[in-house]
Length: 259
Figure 1 (cartoon, rainbow, N blue to C red):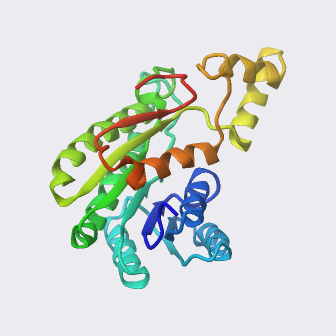
Figure 2: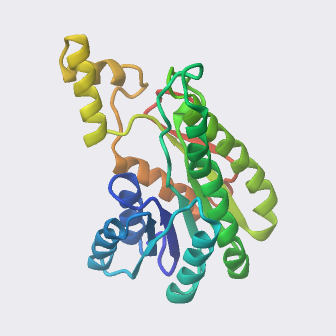
């Protein structure tokens, strides 16, 4: 298995992408610390990981708090035996307001989660990975760093900053044997996107299938990936299959945007 004997941390490990990434890592042999702001969510994911025969550590953690990030890293190293992989998946999707209309006082939260949260977690795991002789860090980013859309100003700005810091971290942590890369999904097919398409269809007087076809038609492959497929790309970058890859932004959006 790709991660036999390895230990991973996945932030934002509630429903959706974080859960799929955590379970995919467990299926490939990893013991996984799952973290989110609500303990009940990570507890359910932890149960599924243990059902796969792997160890799980559910931890309530707000990634905007550096002390909680350090506690998560220290507990993982102490209870699971080290840290080999960090997936920074926690995110805040912003206010969906145009820049000229936005309440700028609310933007700090998006920056704190999407940029500083990933930095806090990276700083927290660094000494443990260095002691281990190396590690792999994957930032779950977005195609919005390249695809401009109204209402996504602060989300795209915070994620663009994350894209930049990913490259800097790759350069700075490379000597410690730590690889740092970003995965950039687009739309991820699931309940929330399905609901959004239904709302769009109602507003425009068309069917949800029409909206799906319109969006899927913007991709090179003609479909919208689901969370399990994005998780597979995360695993690729976190595994030895990508041993020589660092500082990269890998699109995982069926060719809707090329990075």
